View 1 (cartoon, rainbow, N blue to C red):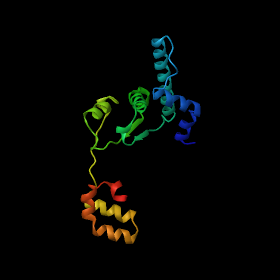
View 2 (cartoon, rainbow, N blue to C red):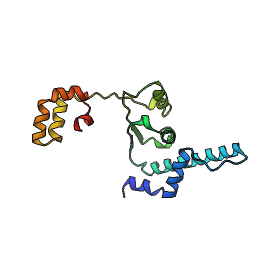
View 3 (cartoon, rainbow, N blue to C red):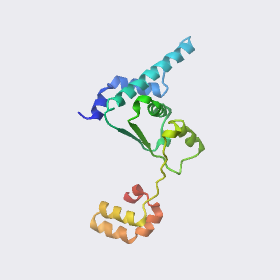
View 4 (cartoon, helix red, strand yellow):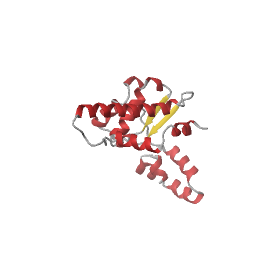
Length: 171
């Protein structure tokens, strides 16, 4: 069986539902001992985070890549899961690839992302749009002959309009 199915089998529907509600901050109705409730909630969250970690550890025999697209939209629960996974010593075979648009990158988001992983374990790669030659190659591989011919005639304008963004070109 694949590693993904092995990981998925570690969690039943009730566990996933419990995990999601706890990470969103939905706690049972409060009782008189707030500090005890907070301690219980923290212990429960840690237990759930460790359950996720155990699921990822199933695949320890080979590297695991977790892709998080548009990380700027990650909620607090997702951020806590990522931080836990990225800082867990037993998960040295895990690599997280997160994407973020330059258009939304600001000091607040940058600071939040910096808290996810140790700075020595982070590599930032700025991606540029496709150049004209790459964009033409993409058009040739993705469009039928008639559409491709029309798009290739306006390739320079298309490149300027989309800044070479492959998704914008394909749409």
